Image (cartoon, rainbow, N blue to C red):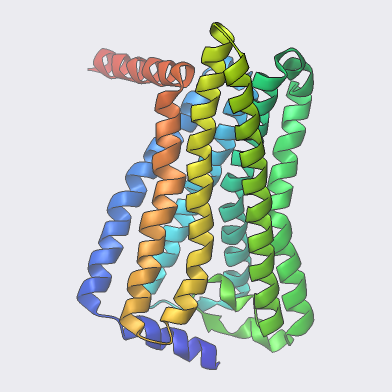
Length: 311
């Protein structure tokens, strides 16, 4: 109960003008990127040539997960803006799903890097390793791993809180699931371990592709150099996602100092890291890839021609 009242105090103690501006800024940034992400996903679904390549299948799943993440995050921002408390029976599964979606993109980034590693370092085996069946299996595994920890956290919470806890009302944020100190510390340690493993895999793939690029010649060298630049982009994306994860721990320290500063840091985390890692960089990736860019142009021209015919 004290946590609920503390959270309400935090939100209501913030400058209403600043809160209105930041909420409006979120709307301005989120909705165009949701449209762009869905357009790129629609492009993937429309073009059979894209659906046959594993990296585009992984990329499409990222777009879908990030669009859902933006929609759910925007819902949380709006409820905070209007000070709307929701039943915990709704907030807890909602927060668990939202938390699971935050892990989808970093895990798919790693899968895409491994796919590029196989394609460049073992080109003759790529077709056999990433068959349609195995690609689908990887998709399922990534989604399963992304939602495994929220599911475990839910099980821990349900085993430690009384049933009356679910009858309360609160804002929808993930800390309502972490009711004990050791559980919160466990979550932080698992976060660090998870992203260290992902960064290690990316560095390994990047170094391996650099070695191939130096030894290759002609078309192979060009493909290796292109793969190297793609991995650099994914590495930047994963670093931003890591900073996005670290920010809540910074917020926990800032909240003890000043409430208004806490709100600023909270919105900055979403606008700077979430938007960059889950909207801007995927957009760059889509436009950098010649095949995907050509497919987007084709779909856009098709839509434009239909509009003119309709007129």
